[in-house]
Image 1: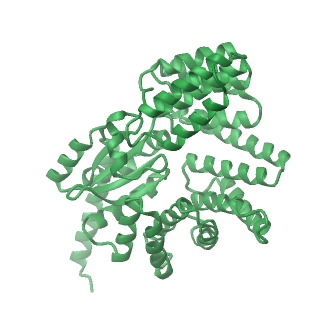
Image 2 (image 1 turned 90 degrees about the vertical axis):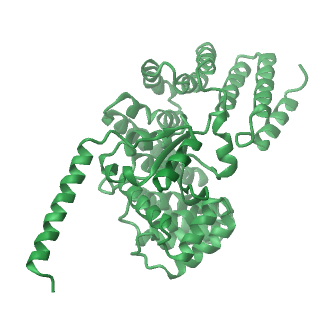
Image 3 (image 1 turned 30 degrees about the vertical axis):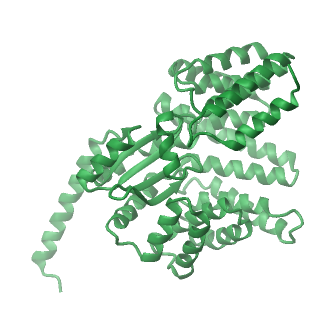
Length: 444
């Protein structure tokens, strides 16, 4: 039996903890990231005996910027500051290419928790999440660092962190077959397994897992991600699969319900991703009217999220998806004003003019598209893989105005750039595609 004195002490301690947390939250200025210096982070982590949280991202990635503006600045994360060393890596920078050869970055953003003592990944998380979800992830990471996770889960996490997706699938399956859905690690194991199944093209297994897990996790912040991936798996079933229409319809219904459920704690980025999956489902069944309806809902949601943003940087998070939504609606001109505003707000950022070039290209305003593409290519930070996308846009602008020689030269420039990228940024598939495209364009 707990004594009254012990109860009083516990209550007092709880009050002190609450005051301490409240004070930390009040003074929180964002997570204290070391930027683009992996060696410095490893040295600090060894000195502090703490794991490293690594954010591998890019300036053009919508989800990366959403996490930066809406999650990493959330005061709820204040209690976690001293438990980790925080490292942010811009994967467009050449100096960060070696990190990608050591740790698998198969999508952006990818987050790792790394044990500096052996430079081994303890956890990997792909995609965005809410502040609450990140806190839960960090709690599990602290357990992993201390060796206190269940052995089979720790093994699955290690395999997944090393990019050994096939082996991770088998290990996570063992975990999920015996796990209590109420276990704290269950949602993360589900989402990790879904991504690993996607990477190994196990469509049927991935869909079955999403169908099983979604009812169990419907009221959690990960419901949107599960519905998104599940619907994507359903669309990818072979067209002659006898259950494809029923399973697509069921996942689409749940995805639409979750996208419309404003009471559900979910990052705006994840909700936007749901609309993209819903567009894919309408396209798969050839429903043009339904497709435009979803695109309109998507654009309205994003416009509302941008209007509610408290800073220009937070508003610009939504630029890429807003542009995509208006392109799907055949209304690219509606994207021009907010992209022009972002270019004024962030004169050194290549993203606003690069996106303006895409909008103007869709409008067939070749002069403005060319000028915007040139501005983007002249900005700092365009020496990495993203330059290839800008050159692709510029080549299409040249082709649109009938200048085939300029288009061919631009594709040749893109090929040279792709071939010159270092290991970790270089893509043989991209190089092969550019070579094929240049060959198809014929001799100069």
